[in-house]
Structure formats: C-alpha cells, structure tokens
Amino acid sequence: MGAKRKIMQKLYCYIDESGQDVGSEFFVVVAVVSNKEQYSLREQIIEIESETRVGKRKWHKVDSEKRKQFLQLVLKKKVGRGEVYFVRYQKPLPYFLPMLEILEKSIRDKAEENYKAIVYIDGIDKKKAFELTNALRLRGIKLEFVRSARDESEPLIRLADRWAGCIRAAFLGKQNEKKIFEEAEEIEYLHRII
Image 1 (cartoon, rainbow, N blue to C red):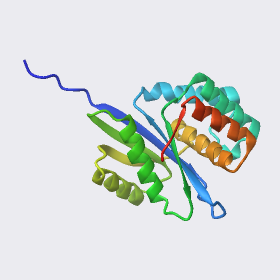
Image 2: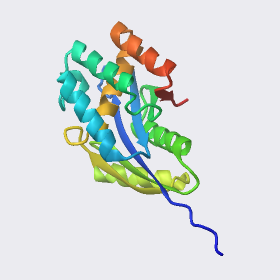
Image 3: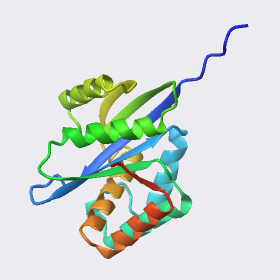
C-alpha cells in the first residue's frame, strides 16, 4: 500500500501599509496570512463593517470613534486572531524590502511542509509584483502568485489597512490606538516580525 499524499495547504496573504507619505519617519506593513475558509473570513469583516458603519472606507477616511469600534469588535469576535503580522521600519528604506521580509517570515510561520502561498498587495503594479514573486521564490517560498488587490473590493486588504493605520498611530503616541494595539499584542492577536 502506497503512502498517502499530504493535502497541500493553501495560504492566502493580504498586505497593506501605512506611512509611505513624505513627512513620515517610519512606516508599518501588515500582512493577514490565513489558511482558513476565505469566504467566511470576508463575510465576518463585512458584517463588522456594517455593524460599526465603517463600510469599505480606508482607515484615514473613517472618524476616530468608528475606527475604534471596528477594531474592538474585530478583537472581541477574534476575526483573524493569530493571522495578522506586522513590521515597523524607519525611513528611508525602499518599499520592496519590508514587503519581502514580512511575506517571507509570516508565510514561514504559518506554512506546513506542503503549501502554496497566494499573495494580494494593495495597489502593487505588475512589474513590482513580478519582482516580488521572483525574490520570494529565490528565498525558497512556495508561491503561486503575487497580485494587486484594492481595498475597495477586498475586505481582508481593508483589515490589513486598518491594522496598519492603528499600529502606526499607536507608535505616534495616539492613546486610543495605543490601547487597542497593546490589547491586540497581549492577547496574541497580532504578531510582530522582528
């Protein structure tokens, strides 16, 4: 009797960042890396967006109280718990390097022996996606592809965007965000890539 073939694990990665603007001294990159049922995860995010009236808006386009409510409800319902990774970098630094590092480390953390990763990055162009695909493969990451996804159409990119905004604000000393960030780290919702 032959050995059973292991089922291939599919990892889905959604990336966004905050702080690329000229005046920022640092930026934060967030990766949501999940092997769970994606439809269910998206539906949970959409439900929380509706309940808190955040909708599909980006972090910086939502008022402070609604942002706080959204993230508190995400934490309470444990949506994405243990699947959200982040890294903070001092500038100046090329955009490409933090993307490469967070993807490599978060995928290795979540991956089983037999896996393939599918990566969606907010607004990445085809050339950069191709370069990132090759760089990850050179580092031994088993990758199906890297593609662009917009937060308007992908709830998990919006989740990454909101965590990136919150984490950056926490590092800037904003108290509401700092409290949420500290709670998320304490309950191991967030994973810091070092």
